[in-house]
Image (cartoon, rainbow, N blue to C red; front, side, top):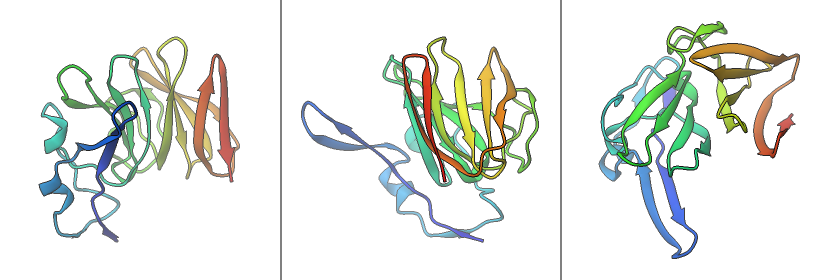
Length: 165
């Protein structure tokens, strides 16, 4: 399978300044790499500009200028700390399957979007499994299943809206 690494741009609304949050321009310009379902995975514990993200598709802010990102083809959910810009894996082991349990050993098939709930829990839309996974208190559990292809979402108060195409 052939993948090209993607950049995650940031647009400051007040000033309309576009910046790259992760990875850096040098990594974003890296040559295409042939991988098996996104096995290029690096950067945890480092500045986000040094991280490799394989097809990041969804993200949500945490209220402290940080971002939680679905690193879709690495099958994990990652977080960038708003104060330090350090990236870390919040949930997922990088294996392509669905497995509930501790966040570090749990698994996703294709995490496409993520939303932060009112109590700081995360709702991860796992498109290939047709489910919404809940990440709360260091554990991953299936919150809803039986969807077709959940790919986009937003939260308004305590209501989760999603597209299921």
